[in-house]
Image (cartoon, rainbow, N blue to C red; front, side, top):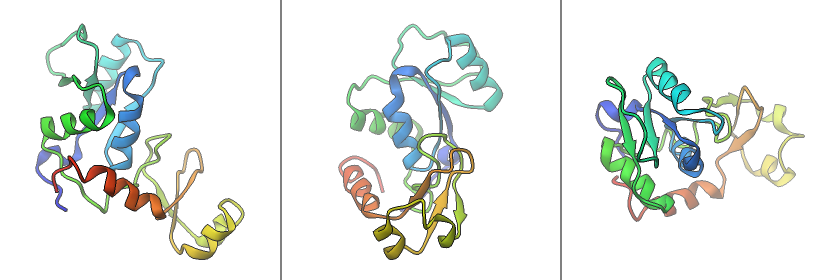
Length: 160
């Protein structure tokens, strides 16, 4: 699995109708900001300040100069992901998968196993050796069966 080109570090901001897409982009390790409370002007300002690409399903989105906007045509999540992948030539990097909090979009940090003992199910604590945590919401993540499930879900359309 190869990370390709300049778009490998692409940063996105998504409009309110693309919440599921933002979550999946985060699972894949991409910086995908999402806030349902932002109006169009605030979204454009944040895209400018953060050098982010706007992803939207809104056809009437203003297109100010200097901002990249992709209008997502697909309705289903898998098609939306494929559309973003094609538009920006994104490649999957297994090392970046599950590297961002799917809730906060913050980069996850390694944490010691002993520190999570009372925060994860007992069987998880016994069977897993590595854990990461979100420094903002303190959610704990580990490489469980979901890792393979995500890879299976992506297999049909994601270019490796």
